Length: 195
Image (cartoon, rainbow, N blue to C red):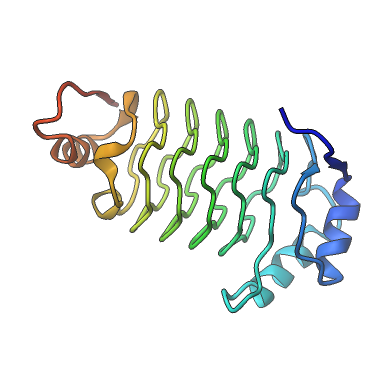
């Protein structure tokens, strides 16, 4: 259970980011619709111009962003350890090079999400829609992909420690199924479903 969270509405969150603030650890932004905010396009343009990995990153550690509505959210290099993005709508969001250890993406709708070079150990993607996502060199030991949809995921074969991730009733195409089965070869049973 997370205590001492600072409640913040979407307007305040966007305004603070546009003012240059980067540390949003331990905030609660439950069910907030960023996409409908009039400055959402300005926010995305600002993030694309400022988040470059040279010390410029948003910090969302232990924050609750449950139900976030933010398509194409641009958060490369984000530090979001233990953050809650469950039930969020974030198609084509960019978390490349992010550190999301132990975060919760359960039941998120994240088609085309980018996790290139991201640190994702112990992340919970149960029942998440990750179709067409990019997991190139993503670090995934202990990551929960149970009941997730991962059809047409890109670069799964280059994910690090894929054989340590958790798969059961995961929905994939024959291509992803082959990659997962090769990673688990000789390690026991595996149950993934092609669709």
